[in-house]
Image (cartoon, rainbow, N blue to C red; front, side, top):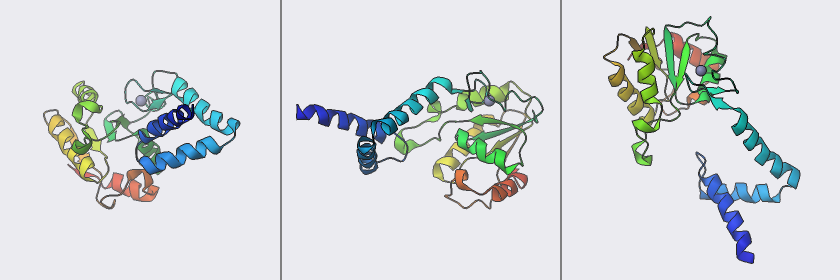
Length: 201
Ligand SMILES: [Zn+2]
């Protein structure tokens, strides 16, 4: 019988370990923390995951997080600049861009970066969907706004090559964002400057 308890703990640690940035030790710490909480707190966490997963979808166009509607609030907003498309790694970056107040076009969320070490290739992220959007026409400028690290750079080059045959200007955020930093944590003024100073890729 004692093994049965161990199995439950092991499953929980295993599930937590699949989250980005969580290694074995952190997974164990989180699991023990969750298990030491009272029922209300632990079940509350589980329920908030269930509810968010049930009620939050990915936008059919840009893959931003969306409510039960098919399109996210940005894609439903016809007053934005329909000639500009900004490519970002994850929906959190959209939030940072919107806060910077210096971008008024639309977005495309890749949901990851090409990462050969972890076996993540172009087919594992929303690149084909991106090319289809661009191929459908209408965009004049594509801003590649990926993190300045090796995976971000590899993904940017790959996308730039794929989009080269289309009649669009491809730009990248201006330098000034420190190499290796995470766009998610860049302050809004730095990001606003990087957007307005963007350069041809
Ligand atoms: Zn959208």
